[in-house]
Length: 382
View 1 (cartoon, rainbow, N blue to C red):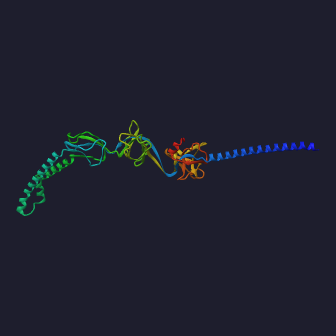
View 2 (view 1 turned 135 degrees about the horizontal axis):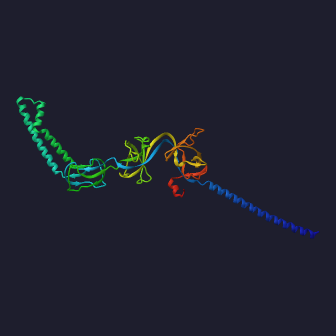
View 3 (view 1 turned 90 degrees about the vertical axis):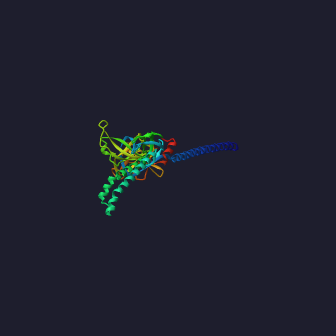
Protein backbone atom coordinates (compact mmCIF):
# COMPACT_ATOMS: atom_id res chain seq x y z
CA UNK A 1 0.00 0.00 0.00
CA UNK A 2 2.88 2.41 0.70
CA UNK A 3 4.07 2.52 -2.96
CA UNK A 4 0.58 3.62 -4.15
CA UNK A 5 0.25 6.47 -1.62
CA UNK A 6 3.53 8.17 -2.68
CA UNK A 7 2.57 8.81 -6.33
CA UNK A 8 -0.82 10.17 -5.22
CA UNK A 9 0.83 12.57 -2.80
CA UNK A 10 3.20 13.81 -5.52
CA UNK A 11 0.28 14.41 -7.94
CA UNK A 12 -1.62 16.39 -5.31
CA UNK A 13 1.42 18.55 -4.67
CA UNK A 14 1.84 19.34 -8.39
CA UNK A 15 -1.83 20.30 -8.82
CA UNK A 16 -1.67 22.54 -5.77
CA UNK A 17 1.36 24.43 -7.12
CA UNK A 18 -0.33 24.98 -10.53
CA UNK A 19 -3.45 26.36 -8.88
CA UNK A 20 -1.36 28.82 -6.84
CA UNK A 21 0.47 30.07 -9.97
CA UNK A 22 -2.79 30.58 -11.83
CA UNK A 23 -4.25 32.43 -8.88
CA UNK A 24 -1.25 34.73 -8.70
CA UNK A 25 -1.30 35.41 -12.42
CA UNK A 26 -5.03 36.14 -12.52
CA UNK A 27 -4.79 38.45 -9.52
CA UNK A 28 -2.09 40.65 -11.08
CA UNK A 29 -4.05 40.92 -14.38
CA UNK A 30 -7.16 42.08 -12.58
CA UNK A 31 -5.15 44.58 -10.56
CA UNK A 32 -3.53 45.97 -13.72
CA UNK A 33 -6.93 46.29 -15.35
CA UNK A 34 -8.26 48.06 -12.27
CA UNK A 35 -5.29 50.42 -12.27
CA UNK A 36 -5.81 51.20 -15.96
CA UNK A 37 -9.49 51.93 -15.38
CA UNK A 38 -8.67 54.19 -12.44
CA UNK A 39 -6.06 56.00 -14.47
CA UNK A 40 -8.50 56.46 -17.36
CA UNK A 41 -11.16 57.73 -14.98
CA UNK A 42 -8.66 60.12 -13.42
CA UNK A 43 -7.49 61.39 -16.82
CA UNK A 44 -11.06 61.85 -18.01
CA UNK A 45 -11.90 63.86 -14.90
CA UNK A 46 -8.85 66.04 -15.41
CA UNK A 47 -9.64 66.78 -19.06
CA UNK A 48 -13.28 67.57 -18.32
CA UNK A 49 -12.23 70.16 -15.73
CA UNK A 50 -10.11 72.21 -18.23
CA UNK A 51 -11.70 75.66 -18.73
CA UNK A 52 -11.59 77.13 -22.21
CA UNK A 53 -10.59 80.82 -22.47
CA UNK A 54 -13.35 82.97 -23.97
CA UNK A 55 -14.12 86.68 -24.35
CA UNK A 56 -17.47 87.92 -23.09
CA UNK A 57 -19.62 91.03 -23.44
CA UNK A 58 -22.44 92.32 -21.28
CA UNK A 59 -26.17 92.30 -21.94
CA UNK A 60 -27.62 95.80 -21.44
CA UNK A 61 -30.91 97.66 -21.48
CA UNK A 62 -30.81 100.82 -23.57
CA UNK A 63 -31.53 102.52 -26.86
CA UNK A 64 -30.78 100.81 -30.15
CA UNK A 65 -29.43 103.42 -32.54
CA UNK A 66 -29.83 102.51 -36.19
CA UNK A 67 -27.38 104.33 -38.39
CA UNK A 68 -26.28 105.37 -41.87
CA UNK A 69 -22.64 104.87 -42.84
CA UNK A 70 -20.98 107.46 -45.04
CA UNK A 71 -17.75 109.38 -45.50
CA UNK A 72 -16.83 113.03 -45.23
CA UNK A 73 -14.01 115.53 -45.19
CA UNK A 74 -12.78 117.04 -41.95
CA UNK A 75 -12.75 120.83 -41.73
CA UNK A 76 -12.08 123.31 -38.94
CA UNK A 77 -14.90 125.38 -37.49
CA UNK A 78 -12.47 128.31 -37.30
CA UNK A 79 -9.97 128.46 -40.13
CA UNK A 80 -8.85 131.91 -41.20
CA UNK A 81 -6.11 134.06 -42.55
CA UNK A 82 -4.03 136.38 -40.40
CA UNK A 83 -4.11 139.88 -41.87
CA UNK A 84 -2.70 143.25 -41.00
CA UNK A 85 -5.50 145.78 -40.59
CA UNK A 86 -3.16 148.79 -40.87
CA UNK A 87 -0.15 149.64 -43.00
CA UNK A 88 3.24 149.53 -41.35
CA UNK A 89 6.69 147.96 -41.09
CA UNK A 90 7.13 144.62 -39.31
CA UNK A 91 9.20 145.08 -36.15
CA UNK A 92 8.79 141.65 -34.48
CA UNK A 93 7.44 138.23 -35.50
CA UNK A 94 6.53 136.35 -32.33
CA UNK A 95 5.27 133.04 -33.75
CA UNK A 96 6.31 130.18 -36.00
CA UNK A 97 4.25 127.63 -37.95
CA UNK A 98 2.95 124.95 -35.62
CA UNK A 99 2.74 127.20 -32.57
CA UNK A 100 -0.45 127.01 -30.50
CA UNK A 101 -1.80 130.46 -29.67
CA UNK A 102 -4.63 131.88 -27.57
CA UNK A 103 -7.26 134.31 -28.70
CA UNK A 104 -5.91 137.86 -28.34
CA UNK A 105 -2.28 136.74 -28.20
CA UNK A 106 0.11 139.05 -30.12
CA UNK A 107 1.50 137.37 -33.23
CA UNK A 108 3.27 140.19 -35.10
CA UNK A 109 4.19 143.72 -34.02
CA UNK A 110 4.54 146.64 -36.41
CA UNK A 111 6.92 149.52 -35.78
CA UNK A 112 4.92 151.61 -33.24
CA UNK A 113 6.67 154.96 -33.82
CA UNK A 114 4.57 156.19 -36.76
CA UNK A 115 1.42 155.28 -34.85
CA UNK A 116 2.65 157.08 -31.72
CA UNK A 117 3.32 160.21 -33.79
CA UNK A 118 -0.14 160.07 -35.35
CA UNK A 119 -1.67 159.62 -31.91
CA UNK A 120 0.24 162.61 -30.49
CA UNK A 121 -0.75 164.75 -33.48
CA UNK A 122 -4.42 163.82 -33.04
CA UNK A 123 -4.17 164.72 -29.35
CA UNK A 124 -2.72 168.18 -30.19
CA UNK A 125 -5.49 168.80 -32.71
CA UNK A 126 -8.06 167.86 -30.10
CA UNK A 127 -6.54 170.26 -27.58
CA UNK A 128 -6.66 173.09 -30.12
CA UNK A 129 -10.28 172.36 -30.94
CA UNK A 130 -11.11 172.26 -27.26
CA UNK A 131 -9.58 175.71 -26.82
CA UNK A 132 -11.53 177.15 -29.75
CA UNK A 133 -14.71 175.66 -28.33
CA UNK A 134 -14.16 177.35 -24.99
CA UNK A 135 -13.36 180.66 -26.69
CA UNK A 136 -16.73 180.49 -28.43
CA UNK A 137 -19.00 179.96 -25.43
CA UNK A 138 -17.13 181.91 -22.71
CA UNK A 139 -17.91 185.45 -24.01
CA UNK A 140 -21.62 184.65 -24.13
CA UNK A 141 -21.66 183.22 -20.62
CA UNK A 142 -19.58 186.14 -19.28
CA UNK A 143 -21.96 188.69 -20.78
CA UNK A 144 -25.19 187.05 -19.68
CA UNK A 145 -23.97 185.30 -16.55
CA UNK A 146 -25.52 181.98 -17.66
CA UNK A 147 -24.35 179.09 -19.79
CA UNK A 148 -25.53 179.09 -23.42
CA UNK A 149 -28.33 176.71 -24.35
CA UNK A 150 -27.51 173.16 -25.37
CA UNK A 151 -28.35 174.01 -28.96
CA UNK A 152 -25.73 176.81 -29.01
CA UNK A 153 -23.16 174.56 -27.28
CA UNK A 154 -23.68 171.89 -29.95
CA UNK A 155 -23.18 174.53 -32.61
CA UNK A 156 -19.94 175.67 -30.92
CA UNK A 157 -18.66 172.06 -30.94
CA UNK A 158 -19.14 171.89 -34.69
CA UNK A 159 -17.70 175.37 -35.39
CA UNK A 160 -14.61 174.69 -33.30
CA UNK A 161 -13.88 171.38 -35.04
CA UNK A 162 -13.97 169.60 -31.67
CA UNK A 163 -16.21 166.76 -32.92
CA UNK A 164 -13.91 165.98 -35.86
CA UNK A 165 -10.83 166.17 -33.60
CA UNK A 166 -12.33 163.58 -31.25
CA UNK A 167 -12.98 161.20 -34.17
CA UNK A 168 -9.40 161.61 -35.44
CA UNK A 169 -8.03 160.84 -31.98
CA UNK A 170 -10.17 157.68 -31.72
CA UNK A 171 -8.94 156.57 -35.15
CA UNK A 172 -5.31 157.15 -34.16
CA UNK A 173 -5.78 155.15 -30.96
CA UNK A 174 -7.35 152.28 -32.92
CA UNK A 175 -4.50 152.26 -35.44
CA UNK A 176 -1.99 152.16 -32.58
CA UNK A 177 -3.81 149.15 -31.07
CA UNK A 178 -3.87 147.39 -34.44
CA UNK A 179 -0.13 147.81 -34.88
CA UNK A 180 -0.02 144.67 -32.74
CA UNK A 181 -1.57 141.87 -34.86
CA UNK A 182 -3.32 139.42 -32.52
CA UNK A 183 -4.91 135.98 -32.91
CA UNK A 184 -8.64 136.28 -33.69
CA UNK A 185 -9.30 132.88 -32.07
CA UNK A 186 -7.39 130.13 -30.29
CA UNK A 187 -5.71 127.65 -32.60
CA UNK A 188 -2.53 126.48 -34.28
CA UNK A 189 -0.48 128.58 -36.70
CA UNK A 190 -0.50 126.86 -40.09
CA UNK A 191 1.82 129.29 -41.88
CA UNK A 192 3.43 132.70 -41.48
CA UNK A 193 4.62 134.58 -44.58
CA UNK A 194 6.18 137.76 -43.21
CA UNK A 195 9.57 138.60 -41.70
CA UNK A 196 11.03 141.52 -39.79
CA UNK A 197 11.38 144.55 -42.05
CA UNK A 198 8.51 143.73 -44.40
CA UNK A 199 6.31 146.64 -45.37
CA UNK A 200 2.68 145.60 -44.98
CA UNK A 201 -0.39 147.15 -46.51
CA UNK A 202 -3.75 147.30 -44.78
CA UNK A 203 -5.56 143.98 -45.32
CA UNK A 204 -2.44 142.10 -46.43
CA UNK A 205 -2.39 138.32 -45.76
CA UNK A 206 0.54 137.33 -43.53
CA UNK A 207 -0.38 133.80 -42.40
CA UNK A 208 -3.07 131.29 -41.50
CA UNK A 209 -4.54 130.07 -38.21
CA UNK A 210 -6.50 126.84 -37.72
CA UNK A 211 -8.57 125.63 -34.76
CA UNK A 212 -7.77 121.90 -34.42
CA UNK A 213 -10.11 121.37 -31.48
CA UNK A 214 -13.51 122.38 -32.85
CA UNK A 215 -14.00 120.47 -36.07
CA UNK A 216 -16.80 119.68 -38.48
CA UNK A 217 -17.13 116.84 -40.96
CA UNK A 218 -18.97 117.48 -44.19
CA UNK A 219 -20.63 114.10 -44.69
CA UNK A 220 -22.31 113.12 -47.96
CA UNK A 221 -25.78 111.60 -47.42
CA UNK A 222 -27.71 109.96 -50.27
CA UNK A 223 -31.03 111.59 -51.05
CA UNK A 224 -33.13 108.62 -49.90
CA UNK A 225 -31.30 108.66 -46.52
CA UNK A 226 -31.71 112.38 -45.86
CA UNK A 227 -35.21 112.03 -44.29
CA UNK A 228 -33.82 109.50 -41.80
CA UNK A 229 -31.29 111.80 -40.11
CA UNK A 230 -32.02 114.80 -37.92
CA UNK A 231 -30.21 117.79 -36.49
CA UNK A 232 -28.91 116.91 -33.02
CA UNK A 233 -28.56 113.21 -33.82
CA UNK A 234 -25.49 111.29 -32.65
CA UNK A 235 -22.57 110.53 -34.94
CA UNK A 236 -19.51 108.31 -34.61
CA UNK A 237 -16.36 109.26 -36.52
CA UNK A 238 -13.51 106.88 -37.34
CA UNK A 239 -10.42 107.40 -39.46
CA UNK A 240 -7.30 105.64 -40.62
CA UNK A 241 -5.42 108.27 -38.63
CA UNK A 242 -6.83 106.90 -35.36
CA UNK A 243 -6.99 103.10 -35.83
CA UNK A 244 -9.10 101.30 -33.26
CA UNK A 245 -10.54 104.55 -31.91
CA UNK A 246 -13.69 106.56 -32.52
CA UNK A 247 -14.77 110.13 -31.82
CA UNK A 248 -18.29 111.10 -30.80
CA UNK A 249 -19.97 113.85 -32.77
CA UNK A 250 -23.35 115.42 -33.35
CA UNK A 251 -25.29 116.37 -36.48
CA UNK A 252 -25.08 120.16 -36.49
CA UNK A 253 -26.88 120.97 -39.73
CA UNK A 254 -28.43 119.35 -42.80
CA UNK A 255 -27.89 121.51 -45.86
CA UNK A 256 -30.90 122.06 -48.14
CA UNK A 257 -29.30 121.44 -51.55
CA UNK A 258 -28.81 118.00 -53.17
CA UNK A 259 -26.12 117.53 -55.79
CA UNK A 260 -27.81 116.64 -59.08
CA UNK A 261 -24.88 114.45 -60.18
CA UNK A 262 -24.15 112.42 -57.05
CA UNK A 263 -27.76 112.56 -55.77
CA UNK A 264 -26.39 113.27 -52.31
CA UNK A 265 -26.89 116.05 -49.82
CA UNK A 266 -24.56 117.17 -47.06
CA UNK A 267 -24.73 116.99 -43.30
CA UNK A 268 -22.40 118.94 -41.04
CA UNK A 269 -21.19 116.92 -38.03
CA UNK A 270 -19.48 118.77 -35.18
CA UNK A 271 -16.77 116.99 -33.18
CA UNK A 272 -13.86 117.66 -30.85
CA UNK A 273 -10.59 116.87 -32.59
CA UNK A 274 -8.24 116.38 -29.67
CA UNK A 275 -5.27 116.56 -32.06
CA UNK A 276 -6.08 113.24 -33.78
CA UNK A 277 -8.22 114.51 -36.65
CA UNK A 278 -6.97 117.33 -38.82
CA UNK A 279 -8.63 119.48 -41.46
CA UNK A 280 -8.36 117.97 -44.93
CA UNK A 281 -8.54 114.35 -43.75
CA UNK A 282 -11.29 112.00 -44.86
CA UNK A 283 -13.20 110.10 -42.20
CA UNK A 284 -15.87 107.43 -41.97
CA UNK A 285 -19.04 108.68 -40.30
CA UNK A 286 -21.91 106.71 -38.79
CA UNK A 287 -24.99 108.90 -38.44
CA UNK A 288 -27.92 108.18 -36.16
CA UNK A 289 -30.93 107.42 -38.35
CA UNK A 290 -33.44 106.04 -35.84
CA UNK A 291 -33.47 105.49 -32.08
CA UNK A 292 -35.41 102.53 -30.67
CA UNK A 293 -35.76 103.10 -26.93
CA UNK A 294 -35.92 100.59 -24.10
CA UNK A 295 -34.42 97.53 -25.81
CA UNK A 296 -32.59 94.47 -24.46
CA UNK A 297 -29.23 94.53 -26.27
CA UNK A 298 -26.47 91.97 -26.75
CA UNK A 299 -23.20 92.36 -28.67
CA UNK A 300 -23.90 91.38 -32.27
CA UNK A 301 -20.94 88.97 -32.28
CA UNK A 302 -22.51 86.93 -29.49
CA UNK A 303 -25.26 85.55 -31.74
CA UNK A 304 -24.48 82.36 -33.69
CA UNK A 305 -26.64 79.64 -35.28
CA UNK A 306 -26.95 75.95 -34.49
CA UNK A 307 -29.31 73.81 -36.55
CA UNK A 308 -30.70 76.95 -38.14
CA UNK A 309 -31.67 78.54 -34.81
CA UNK A 310 -29.96 81.64 -33.33
CA UNK A 311 -28.49 81.34 -29.85
CA UNK A 312 -26.02 82.86 -27.43
CA UNK A 313 -23.80 81.30 -24.79
CA UNK A 314 -24.42 82.83 -21.37
CA UNK A 315 -21.60 82.41 -18.82
CA UNK A 316 -23.00 81.11 -15.52
CA UNK A 317 -20.90 79.65 -12.70
CA UNK A 318 -17.95 79.12 -15.02
CA UNK A 319 -19.95 77.27 -17.68
CA UNK A 320 -21.31 78.21 -21.10
CA UNK A 321 -25.11 77.90 -21.06
CA UNK A 322 -26.62 77.37 -24.52
CA UNK A 323 -29.58 79.80 -24.76
CA UNK A 324 -31.87 80.20 -27.78
CA UNK A 325 -32.82 83.81 -28.58
CA UNK A 326 -35.03 85.70 -31.00
CA UNK A 327 -32.92 88.54 -32.52
CA UNK A 328 -34.52 91.79 -33.64
CA UNK A 329 -32.93 94.75 -35.39
CA UNK A 330 -29.19 95.38 -35.31
CA UNK A 331 -26.81 98.23 -36.06
CA UNK A 332 -23.80 95.96 -36.49
CA UNK A 333 -22.46 96.57 -33.00
CA UNK A 334 -25.41 95.47 -30.86
CA UNK A 335 -28.58 93.51 -31.57
CA UNK A 336 -31.91 93.70 -29.78
CA UNK A 337 -33.33 90.49 -28.30
CA UNK A 338 -37.10 90.11 -28.60
CA UNK A 339 -39.41 88.27 -26.18
CA UNK A 340 -40.04 84.60 -26.87
CA UNK A 341 -43.08 84.20 -29.13
CA UNK A 342 -44.64 81.60 -26.82
CA UNK A 343 -43.76 82.65 -23.28
CA UNK A 344 -43.29 86.38 -23.93
CA UNK A 345 -40.09 86.30 -21.85
CA UNK A 346 -36.70 87.58 -22.99
CA UNK A 347 -34.31 84.69 -22.23
CA UNK A 348 -31.33 86.88 -21.29
CA UNK A 349 -31.19 89.54 -18.59
CA UNK A 350 -29.38 92.84 -18.31
CA UNK A 351 -26.00 92.21 -16.68
CA UNK A 352 -25.61 88.69 -18.12
CA UNK A 353 -22.29 87.96 -19.76
CA UNK A 354 -22.49 86.43 -23.23
CA UNK A 355 -19.54 84.97 -25.11
CA UNK A 356 -18.37 86.94 -28.17
CA UNK A 357 -15.12 85.08 -28.92
CA UNK A 358 -14.30 81.39 -28.61
CA UNK A 359 -17.90 80.19 -28.83
CA UNK A 360 -18.11 78.85 -32.38
CA UNK A 361 -17.28 75.26 -31.37
CA UNK A 362 -18.52 75.26 -27.78
CA UNK A 363 -20.96 72.72 -26.42
CA UNK A 364 -23.66 73.28 -23.86
CA UNK A 365 -22.42 73.49 -20.26
CA UNK A 366 -18.74 73.52 -21.30
CA UNK A 367 -16.41 74.88 -18.61
CA UNK A 368 -15.04 78.29 -19.60
CA UNK A 369 -13.10 81.17 -18.12
CA UNK A 370 -13.54 84.75 -19.26
CA UNK A 371 -10.33 86.51 -20.33
CA UNK A 372 -9.46 89.78 -22.04
CA UNK A 373 -9.35 89.68 -25.83
CA UNK A 374 -5.59 90.32 -25.96
CA UNK A 375 -4.96 87.48 -23.48
CA UNK A 376 -6.92 85.05 -25.62
CA UNK A 377 -5.08 86.17 -28.75
CA UNK A 378 -1.73 85.77 -27.00
CA UNK A 379 -2.73 82.23 -26.08
CA UNK A 380 -3.06 81.31 -29.75
CA UNK A 381 -6.84 80.89 -29.72
CA UNK A 382 -8.92 81.51 -32.82
